Image (cartoon, rainbow, N blue to C red; front, top):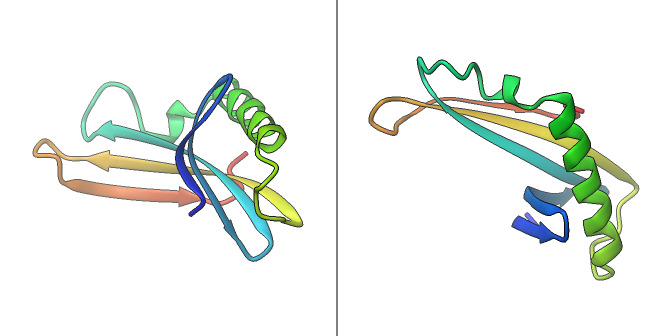
Length: 97
């Protein structure tokens, strides 16, 4: 992992990772099991994906010391937690948007 909670002038990127010549920007959403807000991955709306892409572009421009990469990918991670804070599920979608 390169950075967690990376700040840009437009907001924050949850995770940035690098591996296999790919730079990965990750949006993480957490929800409580049985809540009315839907699943964590449903919370990653088209508006949110546009925002994450804008944040990634700003980070790339503002971080000349970043690792070189042939590809850029946007992943999504959905975390569901139970009533006592225990992990119920964790879903990782590579290339989510």
